[in-house]
Length: 329
Image 1 (spheres, rainbow, N blue to C red):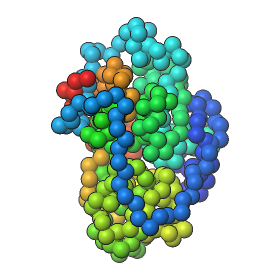
Image 2: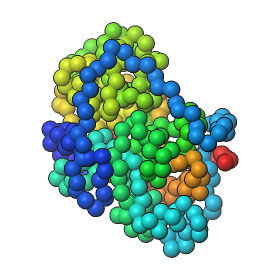
Image 3: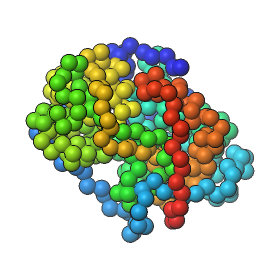
Image 4: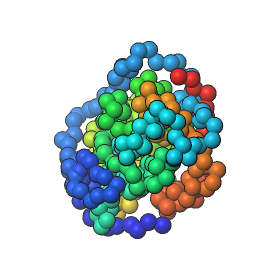
């Protein structure tokens, strides 16, 4: 199991993080802004695809099937996206630096670590034979899709839910984790479900499915936006919001940082299947990533990563999500 750090140190570190951090460096990064909460927030509207009309999406989980067995790092197909990444010398991934357990900076080592970061390492090892040859670019939830569309990163590993709307803009790997949206409140709060937050301020990051679900499923709550869940935690600790909503993985990390916060016993009110985001033009990279994920499911590596980060707060490892294929370019 990984070493857990005091909540105050972690929160300070998360709020002083840089926008770019190499896997082999301990640079500082920009602080997460503490936003002034607006009165209400409306769900975001996806930007149109830059590459014409998207293919129909009848099953958001369907991704591109691998092209056979995973090739050795020294035998990547010539001219492929993977070969280009190898020639560059590093894989560039967009990640969070303030989502404890998934992607957050350890203030002792100066490294960003977590479940999502281990996914980046796994893909990196498949390309280079060395899991350290990656560069992390810290992005907000709202920057995930633009970073891929603009070619700023090769992939995004930032607890991103696979949806048909997002398939119109980017491509996804097969599902690598199944989360569910819940709420976090103060210990002793009467509200233990989303329905119990009528008339109260509830925070979620802007331009996320968490915010869209909040507005859709709890229209009588007052939706408050932030740039990140860490920003939501700051507002929560300042008494500006009564609750935070998001994926159970994220909320578990927030509760671990605040002894006065709790995720009540509740049924998740959505299913949030995570996928690694890739530029829609790089179908070969999606197929390659899917081959790597298939390998991790079968050889136990996925379970090892789960146990390292998520078993303590969320319980014993479930079976890895099954891959669904059948999508055509």
